[in-house]
Image 1 (cartoon, rainbow, N blue to C red):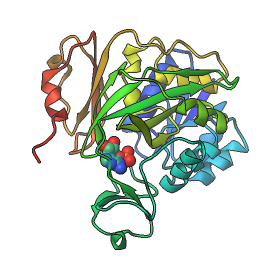
Image 2: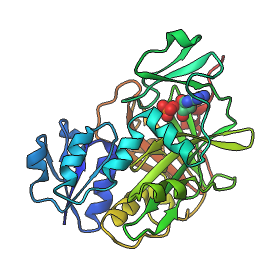
Image 3: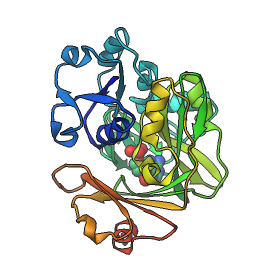
Image 4: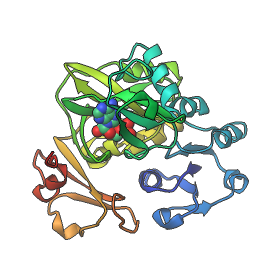
Length: 322
Ligand code: AMP
């Protein structure tokens, strides 16, 4: 069975690494094939990409909606273009979350300033985000959102199969610096909200979905929805009985989902901007993405099971002095 993946970044690469051992083959729609070299075919033309595939999924949400709709008319595609439509525009996404009764940070016209101006589309890893002092500074393609002095950031990862089976991973605590995820640890303490189920069922969703949240004054506010496997779930590769990548494939291929419980206390650190070698992290699981190091670029990650930490990588998690 040959699966097409829109995008060939590290998420596509790890999806293929999981799928190859499940007997699947892959083809990527990607301009820069470095990251998926050796994992499958790579093409740049949509029609050529679609030819002979059994099903299609995607690894990032900044893809033209029309391409996904075009593919949907020819092949099974998961998650659906509806999920992509909701999540590729921050305003549509927040309105959707609110319509389900899921709280978010206040946004729109009646909020406190200074606030955050976020690009409605195409923002990721804190890109397209800036602080503004007054509403007049807001540009047309931006959304204004209140700055939340959150206690923690958490991520919720869940999968839904074609048959409607839902499995939720343990809550993951995340730390971001300069808008980029630096550490994810699980299982995190705290009650599990039912937000994932509400979203999955409303969208008749198939695949893995991630919801990033702020914990603020005892409430969980939804921040961002990703209709795909997610960086906050990389710990599941070694740390859960079934990884997020396997879950995503199982869901899309109509197979029963696996066990999403954690095997142990797990911590995952992103390697950002530079790639220290695996010999530096004894006892940890090392992943390099085959990307050239560049400031602010995620080039790999390291996962440690058993409740310990990696002091060398904790440094990047410390808050910089005000
Ligand atoms: P985002 O691009 O929305 O995923 O935001 C990236 C990171 O910026 C988040 O993980 C937070 O650390 C921070 N951030 C985003 N929105 C807010 C907010 N309303 N208040 C405070 N911090 C935020």
